[in-house]
Image 1 (cartoon, rainbow, N blue to C red):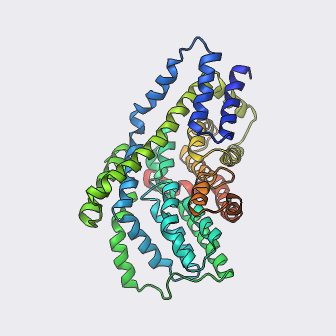
Image 2: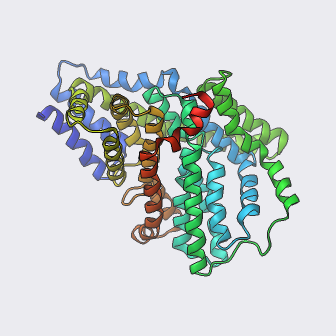
Image 3: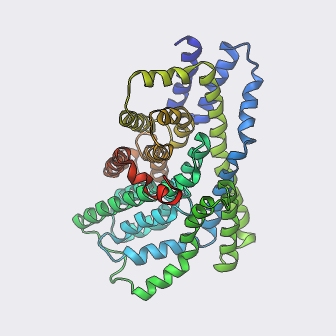
Length: 433
């Protein structure tokens, strides 16, 4: 590997370790390569590569789903989902912790973002947990751990990005996310229950919610609960594409907020919603654009083909490749936030997985799950940093409380690796094998 490859790559790593935004680190390395090591290539190509990704029709779904998530937070859907979760499990030992986990699962079909879910629950649920005597570190750890369920429950943004970047069926990825998400929910709830029982944490309410009251709350929340199923069925039967499903989500959430719940106020909520949407889309798209420059650099230098030939030359089995993927993503997750690692590695590794006989949907779920764990892994997990900052807890102290949730999620990750039917059961049922 010559200096034309090593210098740009080392510069990217150096800038990332300085905690410089990852998109600047990627562009810094690529710009060095364009200007100093490949003088035959005009530097203007960098701008062309940046702009071309924004012109791609495939990525139109991203702003729609980001906007839909922001709109639903103002439409009253989130609060009704929290009321439903509290009614279902709030009376159990560790009830508020269980509500935290269950709400993240329900929010998966609404926000689709671990960051958005963690921010919401830190503001709403954590103060209530503290009032009821829960330990501050444990409350934050539950919020971080449960937020990782959100991205694999459709319509998770990571599933959408993986589908578009690797030409994998978004509908199948959505359908495949339910079982892993529910597995993570059950395992985390079991841990929260026994931890709360050991430390004598009480419930959020003294008695179980009457059945009729639960049915009433379910009826009020049905507008949110039906959304992910409607998206999957619409894509399955060819009624809409993933991009059209995102646009429909925006109109649906506006309709629910304005007509059904009547909580969305145009004068009060429209501009804050648009601000959140623009910031969210900008954050994602600048990563996608900078990663396209890196992809061009790696392809031009032949690293993609060399890496592929090396993997195949090792006579690696599909199981071995899956384990390698998980280990690489878990290590990278300690230093780089989840989205850039997906943007960079998914187009590189997925073709190799397919050549080894791995179903791309199975690989996509495992990939998303591993990237999600990176969001909570010290020292640079994005959700870990976010919750620690919002609550003012030292990162080193919070990291210790998060470790049991890391162990739970990593255990589930390896189950998903070695038992593909767990992931593929629902998509095969809906779409056929």
